[in-house]
Length: 272
Image (cartoon, rainbow, N blue to C red; front, side, top):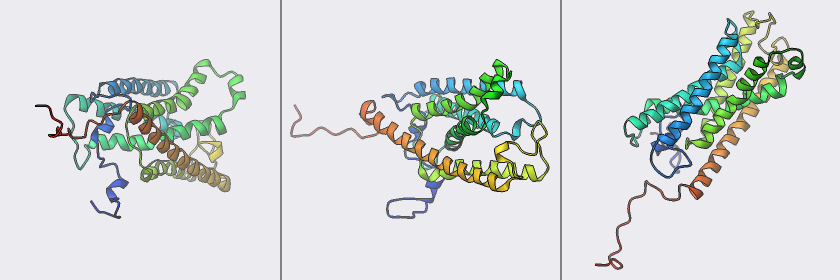
């Protein structure tokens, strides 16, 4: 571990390989005991909902263009986050997990997916309902199933991640902001390369999303820059929400630490 300051900052803090308390990844913020079951049940429900939405989307619209859309990237991310979180909870139930210098690989995988997915899912929801949603198209004859699928893929996805944020003790580090940013910029680069290679959407238009039409490079670049700034703000808000969750949980539920050593009796006050 390479120390970079007197306060103990290390390069490992930039990655998801180390954390002081392993229990933060499988215990709920709203429990007193050490059982992984409460959060396991929550994650089981979240994984079932996320997997159901993913399957619904695939059945309703799977095709050669399915993977080009950011919405569907988000569905995959949410599903992987919930399943990896469920794996962490199951592993903690099957065998005791002890604190170590390095986190187990499946905990690191979950933490990485969590860092990326929460902000990306919220960003997808905001982009869709603010910039892409057209109520006139809904009134022009979209089936009821299509409307509810839109709600599920652009609304419930964010709700799933927010439940995970509020229910779990998963930590958030400002240093990890580059992780969702990397995925967001990766998608922007993909859309540009896809356009340059002559790719089209399902209707034959030379763009994936009209607001990201690279024929108008200045506008597309502005959208990418604004989305990047918004993603940073979202991540900071998630980080702040995590801090508030921890303070409230410690003040109201987890009032006694299970990690502190027992205090030996005072020989001057001990009754013989």
